[in-house]
Length: 171
Image 1 (tube, rainbow, N blue to C red):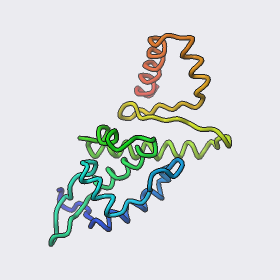
Image 2 (cartoon, one colour):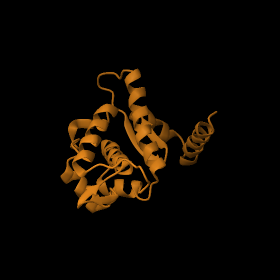
Image 3 (cartoon, one colour):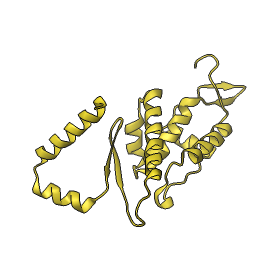
């Protein structure tokens, strides 16, 4: 724990994470996952290894810091992408605070760009995080399926690789 680091009790962490979820407008497709991060839920995530154990204890009261908040937000973001908890654990295990921040900020940017361009009433986008910092978005499943039938896996991989390299280099 760093000197001067902000620390919250479990209840304060719960309240703070709830405010962050609301402010960041983390999606909850179909309402299938509870957006409430209760103290009980946080303890459950900790028992599964999804959230680090408390940073410290003050008079027997567990204290949590900004990393815990980032972990909770990242969990909710990945749940919104329909990932089960075991897969979320694999994706988040060992992540640095910077990497967790990138996951959270990436979701916030995606939400902002989606808000700036209204979707057609029945349009659905499929998304999947495939690498750190890379989210795959399919906006026309049928069109993609047709293209994949007409082209080789190598051709698809080459085009995707080229696009990722270009975007990663900032060109």
